Image 1 (tube, rainbow, N blue to C red):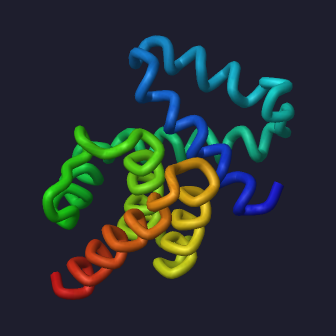
Image 2 (image 1 turned 90 degrees about the vertical axis):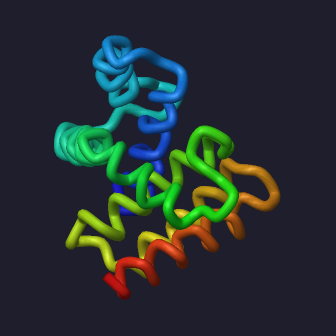
Length: 139
């Protein structure tokens, strides 16, 4: 799988946290990586998806704070579930994943938001991520 496909998988797995308990997510991770709906993935890709999912989850409070601090008039509790999930993944990649350039994280997030979100999701995600990027540059 290429990076775009892997990122899409991570997004879909992170999206499930909005609908499942923490305990249920353990089973969801196993099912997701072996689900015919999305196509079974090999062990290396499963490890990548699982590791990135867990890395985002481990920093979710910090990530949500960054999002909330840069989303004027919005917070993660009021945002659409697709938008907040895309933002969480992108902010993680921008701020904590040294292997992903910021521009790539932003571009990929906008594309995922356009694919799975509402008509305005791409612009919304782009605006918040641009603010996060500027805030990181100024700190």
